[in-house]
Image (cartoon, rainbow, N blue to C red; front, top):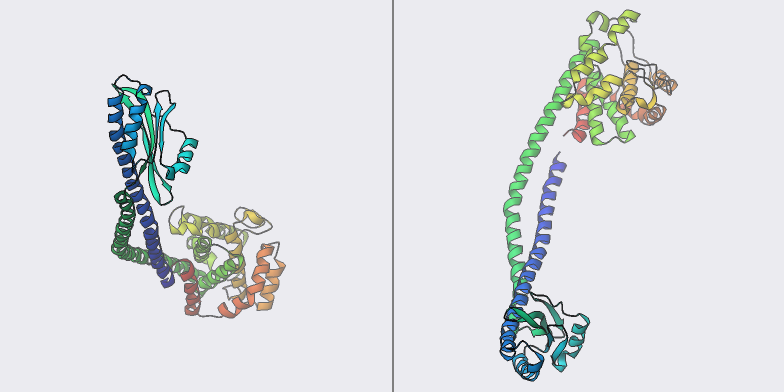
Amino acid sequence: MKSSLKKTHRDIWYRAILVILIIGPLSAIVGYQYEKNSIERSALEITRTLLSGKIQELTSDNKLKESQNDITNTLSDLSSGFLPVLHLYSKNKSNIISIIDERFESMALDMERVRPKFGADGYSYITEKGAYKVVRVQFPITLNSNIIGYIDALHIMSENERDALVKSLAATSLISFISALMSVLILTPLLTKLTIKNFNQTQHLLRTNFETLETLGRTIAKRDSDTGTHNYRVTWVSARLGEEVGLKKEEMTSLITGAFLHDIGKIGIPDEILLKPGKLDENEFSIMKRHVDFGVEIAGDTGFLSKAKDVIEYHHEKWDGTGYPHNISGKQIPLSARIFSIADVFDALRSKRPYKEPFSFEKSMDIIINSSGKHFDPELVNKFTSIVNELEDKIIGTTEKEASDLVYKMAEKYFF
């Protein structure tokens, strides 16, 4: 129980740290992208404002080619220092003017490989050239609401713009890290406290359920045996065989629940039949068999008692189909019931009952082995014989307190 709680507490902190490691970089990327988009939009608007107005002044007749010399001179003056590559296209998308700084000739060639989109809205994106960061800007030039040409240019980012990118990345990363860290430091203890509270409540509920199983099991066990030890013994033997078979946790809880309540239906059987020291006659046996139906009704279809239904309903079935109440055979019988039937018969053979003295270990094992393939699943008998010496040493002849301690330790693994 404590190890499970420690693991849960550890998992909360691991996940909290994971949140920091994920949120920090993601926030930094988002912040960087926001700043990058801002610079790209700014470069586009600055270039558009600077160039469009001058070109419009020089082309009042909507003809770029006739104003080519004037525009070239003007663009050369305007672009010097911050637009190292500038292409002017006609409205028919043919190149009219190209102004290229020789330091950026390779980038100008790259621009030619990726032709402008010639869109109505314009666009921009940041790229690099050696030590330079540049923004490629593309936009239409309009006059009297008509497109008269297009600009495709490289805008050199200023030192302030470059610094803004770096600072944005650093600031966003730091703020995100601090925010995530503070959230973790504040929320994790609260989550841990709630987890512990929920864990304790769950443990209390499971303990209550288990104690209910014990009480019900002892109540019926004491009706047809000297003490409640029988119920503890068959429960522990069933659980050990279940472990050997490799049952999962949920299957183990169902098996243990069923083992405790396997004969709960005997509450409805009259004492003169239940406690008869001799063999039951045919009529008495037919009444005794009804304890299965009573037990299934008591277990119901909902709640934690319903987990016991497979064992209650099928533990008197036999591998060869000669059991009751359904006369089913082989693997039609639920695995938990097949496991329990071996444990139940073994304990019955090794225990004193109103109608018999306990059989020896050797005689009991002869009966179990000879019943393989008839009463019992042969594979389970093989599993059982591999651990039977351990079972004999630990459970046969124990007091009720010793047997209950063994079962409680088993229950801690699967209930609590």
